[in-house]
Figure 1: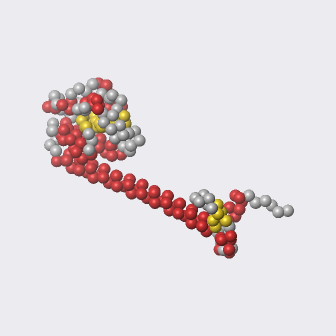
Figure 2: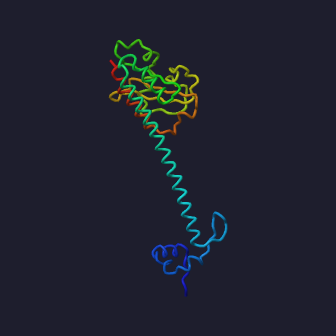
Figure 3: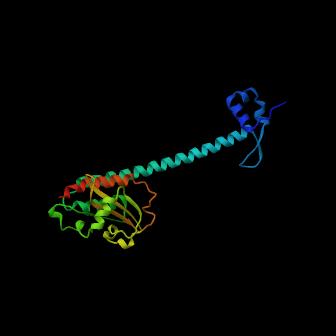
Length: 220
C-alpha cells in the first residue's frame, strides 16, 4: 500500500535533500508552475527567477528607504550642529534666550519659537522670558517626561508664541536641571502635519537637553 504524501512532507524532504534537483536536472524544465505575475505556465527555473526578482526589488526599496532616512538624519544633525555652535558663541546673559529661539527658527526653519523660565536670578526677573507663567504651566512642565509633539490643544504655553492662535501643531519641551523643570521651550507651526505624534523624538530630546544646559546659567 502506497502512503499518501502531503505537500508539507514533500517540502520537508526536498529541504533535507538539496542535491535532488542536481541529480534530476531534467525536472527543472519539466515541472510547470502558474506564474502569479502573468498567469501563464512557467518552468520551475522561470518561477525561481521571478521569486529572485521580487526579492531583489524588495531589497532595493528597503535600501532606498534606509538611504533616505540616513540623509534626513544627517541633515538634521548638521542643523543641530549649527544651532549648537551659535549657542556657544552667544552671550550667556539675558540675550541668550532670544538667541536660542532665533537659532531654532533660522537653522531648523520652525515658524515660531519661544520659551519661558522661572526660578531665575533676580536680575532676570522682569524679562520677556519670565512673564505670564501660571502655576498650571509649571505643573505641566514637571509632568512632561518626554517632549510633546502633536496637535495644539489650546495649550497655555502655545499662547506665549507671537501668533499662537495660528498654531496647528506644536512641540513643547521641558527644560530641566537635576530632574526639576525650570522652563518650557515651545515651537509652533500653522501646518498640522509639521509636528505629529508619530514623529521620532530623539533630536527633540537633544534640543531640550542642550537648551536646558545653556539656560541653566540664568537660574537663581
